[in-house]
Structures are given as structure tokens and as C-alpha cells.
Amino acid sequence: MRLFRAVTLCIALSSPVAAVAQEPEADSLRAEIARLEARLDSLIAEIEGLALAAPAEDEDPIARLRAAAREAASAGAGDVEATEDAQEFSGRQRSLQALNPEISVTGDIFGQLREGAIDENNFIPREFEFSFISALDPYSRAKVFVGHHEEGGQLEIFEGLGGHDEEGGEEDAHGHGTVTEIEEGYIEWVNLPAGLSVTVGRFRQRFGTFNRWHGHALPGSGYFLPYQVFLGEEGLAQTGVSVHWLAPFGPGAYEAWFEVTRSSNESMFGESDEPSFLGHVNGFWELSPSTYFELGFSGLTGDHVDEEGRFQNRL
View 1 (cartoon, rainbow, N blue to C red):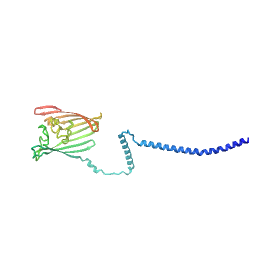
View 2 (view 1 turned 30 degrees about the vertical axis):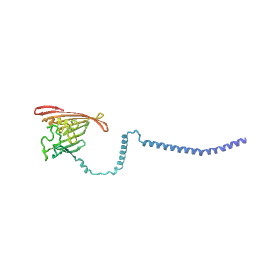
View 3 (view 1 turned 90 degrees about the vertical axis):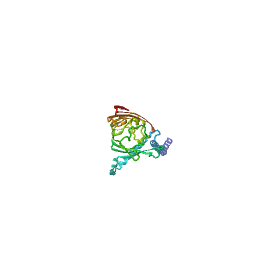
View 4 (view 1 turned 180 degrees about the horizontal axis):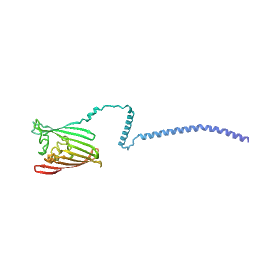
């Protein structure tokens, strides 16, 4: 009995010693696990940050530009808020010059070489044009084009087509007829409701593509033959009102013009001063950054009056 009690006492005394020896080992394991978990969390956070910072390969470049613009705008807004208390005021007296019209001058000089005409003046300033363009307000503009023309630089295809040298001109030192006239002078209202714009005054009408162009901007020495035959050497420019409409639908750009002007083109209307009517529709499609397709139709009608009587002309 005494032996059993002694053995029991020895076991009871040795058990706390073993428990005490195992506690430091468990604490070190828990510390190591905690350190590894912290390291794992930091690596996961770093990977997520890199994934957010790197742009996707298939991301739209326009989307990247928009994102950069939003970041720049937000940064600018922060700067404005930071400097709001230190706002500065300055005078805008020098900005008044923005109300002055834009003035430009273009020249069209014709030169030719002909056998047996060595003594002649073969260089002729066919036209000098002065343009004045002024923005009256955000919705209206005034434009005036004044041209000084000199005859002798045109290629004579037909006689009597009604060019600048018909009547009312003067002669210079070389015997060439000269005339100064207002080629265009009008006011236009743009950005009106429903895609409309209105032009009132004297203007080159929207008949075809090249009739709107001035002489110095043409790809050749003059207007194409059909223009000269039906509308005269200088094309169609009359006084009246023009309404333009830009359609808000479709994959391309669709436009329409309707113009009412007083007949003053002798080639088309003779001596008539009755109203003439013009319509033009146009479609434009961009096929690629460097290729486009354009298709348009024009129609012109009005009375023609001459010695033989009055009849209606349609073109």
C-alpha cells in the first residue's frame, strides 16, 4: 500500500513539470503562425494593388484617356478648392480686341507663256480678295468678301458668259478691264433649334460642290465647264435667304438647303428679277480616317426673261 502511494505521488509531481515544458513550445508556434499570416496578408494586398494599377491589355484607349481626364479634372478641382480663399481678380480690357473682325487677303495671279507674245505682260493679277469675318454673338456671324478683279487671266471658252469684264469696269495701264465688287455679304445664324441655320444677304449658293468656292480656292484655273455654260464664268451668287438643316440621325452626315433669292444671274435668268428657288441635299460618309464618300443633288428653277419673252428655266 505504501508502495502504491509513493508511485502515485511521483506521477503527480512529474505531470506539472511536463506541462510547464510544453507551454513555451506552443507559444513559439503560435507566434510563428501569426507572423506567417501577417506576411501572407501583406503579399495578397500587394498583388491586388499591382492588378489595379496595371491597365488591361484589351482596354479601350479612349477609356484610358477618359480616365486620365477624370483624374486631371479631380486634381484641378482640388487645387481650386485649395486656392479658393486666395482668389485674384484681373481686368479684361485687352480682351475687347476679340470683338474685332478677322481680316485676311488672298491673291490669284495668272502667268502664261505664248509664242510670239514676248512683249506682252504675261502675268496678270486676276483677283485680290479681302475678307472680313466677325462673330456678333455665340449664334450669329457676319461675313463680307470684297474682290478686285482684272480681266485677261481667264481661259476664254465661250463668249458672253457674264464674267466680271462685261460692263462697268475700268481699264488699267495695260488695257485690262478691272472691277471691284462685293462678292458676298451676309449674316448667318447657327446652332438654332432642330439643327437649323439661316443665312441672309448676298452669298454664293449651294449648287453642286464647287459653286460655293471662291476663284482662288478652285482646283483649276476657273469653274468647271458645266458651271460656266449654265451659270456664267463666276458661278451663281445672288441675294436672298438660305435655310440649312443638319439631320440628327443616320450613320453619316445628312444636310439639306433651301434657298430663295432674287434672280440676277444673266446666264440663267436673263433680265428677270423674279424670285428663284434652289434646293440641295447632301450625304457624307467617312469610310476610314483617310477616305470618305459624298453624294449630293441640286435643283434650281426660276423665270428667264429676254427679248424673246418669258419662260421657266430648270437646272
